[in-house]
Picture 1 (cartoon, helix red, strand yellow):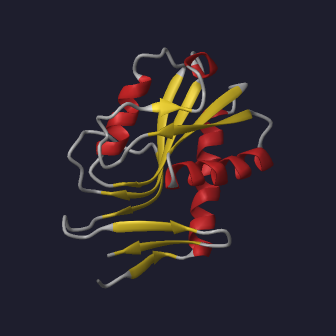
Picture 2 (cartoon, rainbow, N blue to C red):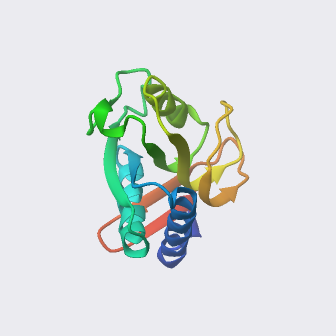
Length: 165
């Protein structure tokens, strides 16, 4: 399978910093904001965004892991925080890639039962082919791809790289 780099580690770091500034600008008046990262890469990305946010602002940024089975998104979804922890607060749902919108749609559905002050989404790569009418409010890169192509983001301890396959 052919694999092309679409974002290098350095480019990903710039995108994360830009997303963090956008999230901060959107939430500067809040005392606390929840960064809810979808299991695995979404949670890793949320942690990286949080590091930048803590560097640039005085807002309290709380991490939340959204445990969701991406292969079977209809299975029960749980979070590392209780409903009371994010009720009436601003929440940003974070994932690495917005492909068809299925994962984000089911994750959003989980939070619909809770009154939130504000709900936004952030992704590193936004593909422009979606099954569901869901959008990323904060995105690092928008990319038009064919339905046969796949985007993969790989995070390891020292580097991150995004590939088009």
